Image 1 (spheres, rainbow, N blue to C red):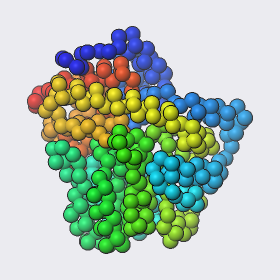
Image 2: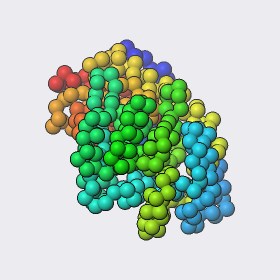
Image 3: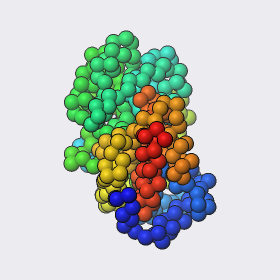
Image 4: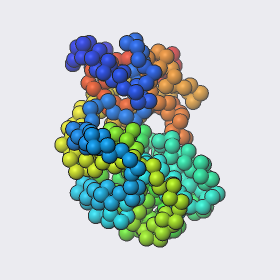
Length: 399
């Protein structure tokens, strides 16, 4: 089958990688212990070894029994995040504007509590990471989805529809940039236009930028809050080192807020809502920021090769599958059009023994799509594509 069958590494390497990965107890790999099991390519977790500076920092914490209750105000992490944003994203945010939290989703939840009231409408462009959708209803806000426009070449915000929602009374919008699941990075024009809308209607954007370090573009990621004065005052940014450096189980994220009035509201929320970061997560985050650069650069190169492999496989063997080469992340969003009632991930799992995420969970516009995680080793990715491509072809043909 052309590119898909051109295995660059032998079956021994595949068997070795799978044996190593199946010893992991994370949710991605647990439940797939026998040698004939399916290969998981669903949850957003990479299969690479963790950066040595992170291993050393965590090992030192364990060696010295530094495993007690963390300081959820962690000045050292706040200062590290300030250095990170200034150095890598040209955003000189103050350490005072950083809130330490257990993860990015908690940041979204706190942001909702800070800038909206129960019953307020919150706009979420879809498809998007499902917990962002759930957070709105979980906190008594009203979710309104605004589907991205698929042009056949790219994904674009429907800015007119978004403005219409704000004109009708919406109070905030949640965006994911770089976007999970499509890997699209918002254009400067889209960001500027969104800032104008927010200023016009005195509203806020909650920006999930957790995949920002994993961009393949020549230009650095632009945090929404750094683009204009209007956005600086109206953006609440959530992020973490956990996706880029592959440590989600260590429990640490941050919320970045420059608007002083919003910070007063955040500070008044119950302290228990801020707590939850682990002390190991904090030291790992600092190590990633200060010493994890070389590992991240190497990982981006590996992911770029994997992304291009997926692109080439599809172009050669399944050109009818809708796919946009992602600007960022290690996620491939594949459109099949097999009918909205079909659980595509279930069918692929049954036929190909590869576990994907079904697009229907990502909101409006997700039906007919699946998400594939290509953040794995070359032998495993080659096996995934060799199994998945024939099934996608059959589904696209209605078989």
